[in-house]
Image (cartoon, rainbow, N blue to C red; front, top):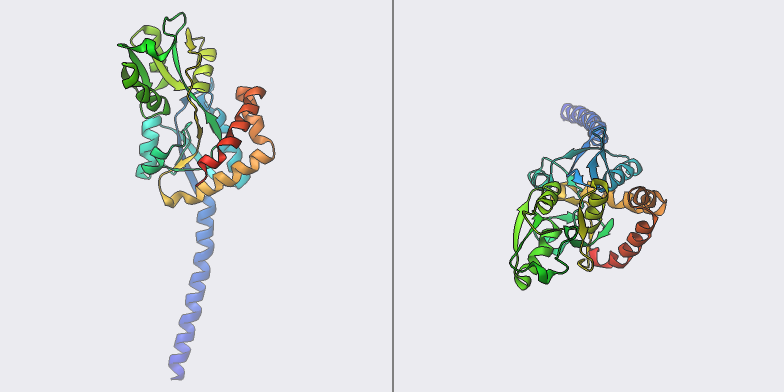
Amino acid sequence: MKKLTKAFAAFAISGALAVTAIVPAMADEAEDKTWIIATDTVFRPFEFTDENGDFVGIDVDIVAAIAEDQGFKYEMQSLGWDSAIAACQSGQANGMIAGASITDERKESGWMFSDGYYNATQSMTVQEGSDIKSFADLEGKTVGVKTGTQGASYAESLKEENGFEITYFEDSPTMYQAVLGGQVVACFEDTPIMADSIKSGNLALQIVEGSENEGAPYGFAIFSEDNQELLDMFNAGLKNIQENGTYDEIIAKYLGGDEEAETESELETTAAEVAE
């Protein structure tokens, strides 16, 4: 009996040592984890590539600030809108930030969103000097949208009533060129994206006054509960950078002070709508 007791004690001690050895290893693994964040870098000023080939923009800076605040490592991959979604759904990426509007439809299809970090409307854009002044002028014509976006949803909601057709594009620059080239008479895009694209690209396009919808907040998204930790860190970090002024500095850097104040106000009014 004593022999068995001694043997059991030895086993228990060795087991404890084994557990002690495993716990630090698991902690090190967690600390060394690099989260893969997918994006679409043709969505200026939220994410785009500068002249040096570096990823820049509002979303890029927000993620960097949050990662620094929360102390996690990440790798941002530019995959394009559809491919970014697919990468998250297949587990090849942990999360996605690409000016994604928070909607009930997306939530129902498996998107899990952070708190809203920017409120954006969608608008209709036409060539400079176009005769199209309202949705009613689109009857019998074709407009362009980017696949899977809120701009596409907005156009689809207006299609039947106003009698126009829709052509889908995989990226915004190609869609803009289709408007400029006359393949489509207008396009629907997020208002701040369109305004920045017209200005930075010196495009002969104009946003139709009064064509904006009510808009919705952008959110960071995950597609699996396995990545809940990343979503929680994003929310915590977002709150901190909003409180310490870093968020305002990022918005002002790309959009200016007036837009910053407007965005802050809009986020406050939509906070209840996006709360889970």
